[in-house]
Length: 174
Image 1: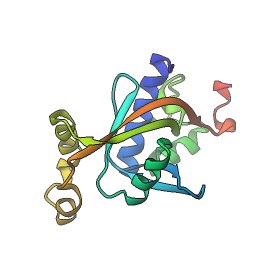
Image 2: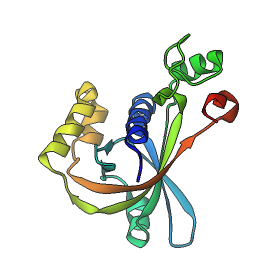
Image 3: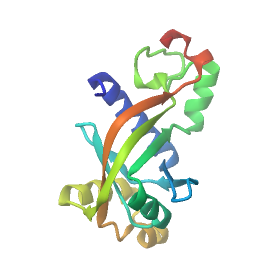
Image 4: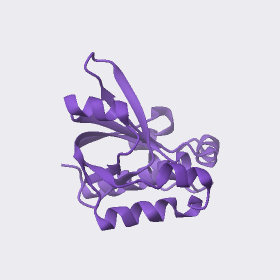
C-alpha cells in the first residue's frame, strides 16, 4: 500500500510531468519478450491509488496487454525551467532559491508498476476530464483530428512505485 503522503506526491509529479511533456510513457512487453514504450497523454490518477487512460490509437499496447496486463508507467518532469532551476540550485525545485524539503519537487519523476484493465466505455465524468485537459487546444485542426474520438478507457491498478532519483542532488533524502 502506498502512503497518503507518497500518493499525493505521485499525483503532483504526474501532473507536472504531463503538463511539461504532454504525456507519460507506458512500457509493456510483447509475446517475444521485446519491450515497447507507448506515449500516452491521457493518464489520469484518482484519489484512491488507481487511475485510467483513454485508449484510442494504441495498437501495439493493446496487443501486448492482451497477453500480459502488467506494465510500467513513467512520468518525468521535462520542463526546461524545472531542470535549469534544479541544476542551478543543486536540488530539484520548481521555485528558484526555495528548498521545499519533503515536497513533490524532491523528485523529477516516478515509475508506477501497474496492472491495466480491459477496454471499457468511458464514463461521463471521465469524458468531462479529458475535455477539460484538451480544451486549450480544441480549436486546432490537429486536436480535432487526434482527440475527437476519445470514448474508451482502461483502468489502472497501481501495485507499487519507484521515484526517479539523482542521489547527488537528493542527499537530503538519503
